[in-house]
Length: 430
Ligand SMILES: *Cc1c(COP(=O)(O)O)cnc(C)c1O
Image (cartoon, rainbow, N blue to C red; front, side, top):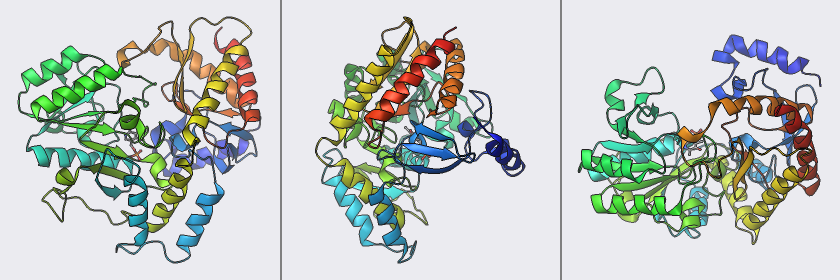
């Protein structure tokens, strides 16, 4: 497979951008080699600068649930942009997307649009702090919530810790407001509430943690979080930037039927354009400016072009059987992969929920927290990733990342993918 053009583009990009990229994981550091520069996408396929074609399971890291350049989404964008791209004044399209979301989601009553997942979470945390008049937040090791200061914090050693910053440039004083505990550990959460009584504004969790492997939680654990939050007048914040509109239209809240206090969305909501959102009850949202005193604003918030892309995409998601068909496809792919294995690879697991899947090399039946992921097993993923690329299959370039099945994947795509996996896994496991 020729890579000359991608390699030359990457060399050039290194002059302009740190590491040659505008978001770190794109640099292929964890799988080795150089990133592919993508020229176009249509449906489930993408083409790189050298003209190589791939079946894509990255989907721009989650947003593209309909696949690339979906006709309805493209037409909506074109139609809207013809009339101007931004006004900094309200448009009817914001109402339309809000109505589409709120009339199909009983877990939220009012929302605010922003322009990324990071911004949604950062704003939601401020709302939780403003509403509760408390400073500390509790997060879980292995959950990703974007790159705002309070959340670039990882666990220290001990059951309940103030984290260590996971990035230079985050002041110690921010880190001291963020408590980090392990997923699936009720004892640690209880201890945090005992240690910091009446100080915790919110618990933030990816209810379906999918940014550090796929760490599926027990429903009982999520329900436990709901209860302990209620008992302590702490808000429960579901960060559904990845799971929202992916695990059914109402995401994890609907899947587990647990009512959080605040929900954040991103990725799918914008149909491939930059949109994020946070939502809550009428009462809690009344704290946001200009109604309340929690300030939050955005020049391009509710951007009409992005709104119309979101409307077009979510309209498709609301069609009957949309999610059950995606899930069936995902199960079909996984079953095909196992039936294509030539030898018995006992430590291969493919964890999945809805249309999200994660390839893990483990003997464990479940992996529920970050500490249970074997870093050494990533050596298999590095080989698998390269061998799959050579066979025309594109996965996100890290073994900690999940894959996504989209509406545009065909049976033929899935069969071809499973065959490639069969061959690639034989090589990856030696
Ligand atoms: C992707 C993601 C974010 C950050 O969203 P950006 O749009 O990349 O800023 C936050 N939380 C979760 C759960 C995510 O998956």
